[in-house]
Every structure is written in C-alpha cells, then in structure tokens.
Length: 201
Image (tube, rainbow, N blue to C red; front, side, top):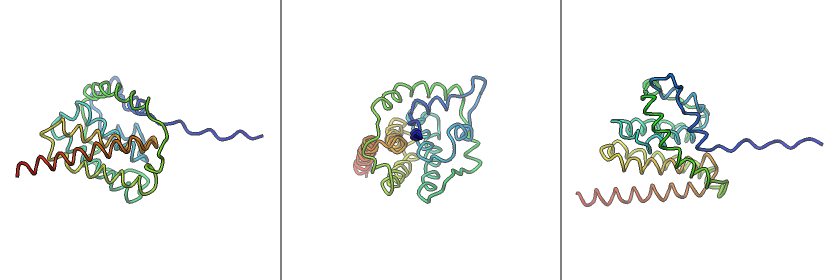
C-alpha cells in the first residue's frame, strides 16, 4: 500500500526571522540579500518581512517607512496582476541597512513572533484564498500609501505596518483570524487618521 503524501511544513514567523538573520561577518544587508533568503515567489511572505521590520525600531531610520511603502506597493501590484516571481528595480534591491541594526530589530521581534506562531492555526481559509486573498493585498497597498505622509510619526507608521503584517501573516499561514485582526487594526488607524485631519482642517 502506498504511503500518503506528507503535507508541507507549516510556515511560521519565527522560522522566517531565523532565515533573515545576517551572517556574523556581514556589515550591511541589502534588500536583494533579504529576497534571496526567503525566495522571490511568495509575495505575502516578502510583504510580511517588510512590514515586520517596520514594526521594529528599524522604522525610526529616516526614509525607511517611505522605502517600505514603495516596496510593498510594487510587490502588491505584481501580486494583483498574477505575476509568479518578484521583480524589484535595481535601486531598491541595492538599498541596505546595517547588519547590526537588523540583528537588533530581529531580536526585538522574536517575542511577538513567538506569540503569533503559538496562537495561529489554519481557520477561516476562505479569507486567504481567491478574491479575498487579492483583497488582502489591496488593503496592504492602501495602508502603505499613507506611510510617507506619516513618517514623522514613527509610532503611527509601526501601528499601520503591524496591520499589514497581520494581513500577510494570515495569508501566509491560511489563518483568517489574523486577517480579520489586520482589517480591524487598519480600519481603526484609517478612521483615526481621517478624524485627526478633519479636526486640523
């Protein structure tokens, strides 16, 4: 009797952070290096990486939220048009950050990543497939559009990046509960931003 095929191992955020850990001898890490570490055919995973790094203290580096927004917009455009492999322009792929700063950011993320992995499981799968999956990418792009304007407020940018991370983590792990949490967090942020701007005008 033939042995049934083994299901592929379930992706976790902790394993993803491990894959991003720089070589001990590295001084700087480029976006090209990060893409090579995780592959160029999983758009949700790559967007998740960008988002979680912006949740960390790395978001305080000048222009990093704007760079992250541009990267996410380019990736979501390709995901929405059905492209199979990621393409990013050379000037983005060559952008780099200090390896020491990346290590500190990854260390800061390990505890929340462990919590997210612990409480994640496959559920509400319809929210991570078909047109609902595309809706998640569209929501991520909408949130990223605000980051250049919010760059002077790193906490708000990190909160928004957290919503994108929830959406992409839910898509990556097929966990609709995290996708719902991402929509709720993103919706609260957009509502608050509109209220603030309305009060200033």
